[in-house]
Each structure stands twice: as C-alpha cells, then as structure tokens.
Amino acid sequence: MVGQRVSYQVLLHGGDSASGLADMLHQYLLQNCSEFPGKVRQARELTGDVLFRAAEDEAVCVRIAFRGESIGLEDVPHVPPGATVMTTDFLSVARLTRGEAGPVGLLARGKMRVRFSVSQLPFLVQVLRFMQLPEELREKRTISPWIWWAGGTLAAGGAGAGLYWYFQTFP
Image (cartoon, rainbow, N blue to C red; front, side, top):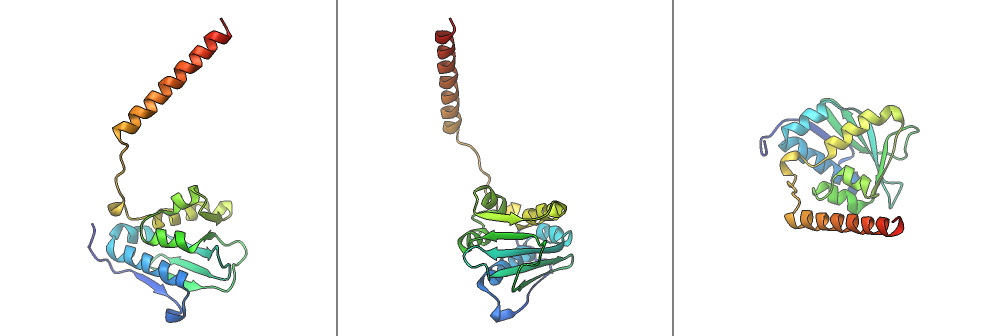
C-alpha cells in the first residue's frame, strides 16, 4: 500500500557531518521504510552489516547496520576485513535512490561490484532484495508485439540460412 506510514527507525549517525553518500542512502531507506510496509517487513528480517563504498573516492565508506528493529548508517574510516562491500559510483547511487536503477541491474551492467564471502551470500541476497525499488513503484514492462515479430523473423531467417548452408555443404 503506497502512502500508509509505518513507524521504523532509520538512523543517520553523524548528522550534518555525514558524507553525501550516507545522506543519500539514509534518505532512500527512510523514505522506503516510511511509505512501504513491505520494505519494513524485509528490513526486520535483516541482521548484519553491509558497506557502501564510493568508487570515485575509496575513503568514502558507509556502513549500513541492519538490526531487525532499526537501520543505522554511519561513515566509517576503513573497511574491516571480511566485510560485505558494495562499491559503486555516485551517479549509480543517485540512480538507485531515485528509483531509476536497482542494485541487481547495477551489478548486471558492471556499475556495482560486490565483495563477500560465501557464508554472507544469503544476507547479501536479502539486502539486494531490500534495496530494490518497492514493487508498487516498479514499471510493468511488456515487450512490444513489434519486437516479438522482429525477433521471430530474425530467428526464422537465421534458421533458413543455416538449413541452406547445411544442404549446400552436405548434399
């Protein structure tokens, strides 16, 4: 349900002295958790830390601490060994927070890199699912009939050319 407000704490440690990356992520998570009950349910299932690192400046690193009943964000001076780390550029974070891109899409296009251990994989999958744009706001994408027609025509043409080559080569 869009618009129904749910009370859930998303805390930004450092306030006005927090980095721009921390502030963008805080605003995004706060908005999602205050407007979408499904996101709150997902957040309550998460326990652990993930770090967002700026690709342009490795000194900018934000820890997102999921604690079940709250989320805390804070700038950290370095990446602890063995931490789950998502590295992306500021433009991609801006696209993520505006709902123009999802984390899985950023990973698929190489705009985001993730470092994690195999034992962290279930947590990472939950975090990626939580960071996705709420389902209520996602565009329902359908494939145009013209694209289906063009794809079918190309497939049929390719099959015909393959058969022609086969029968010409192996009479």
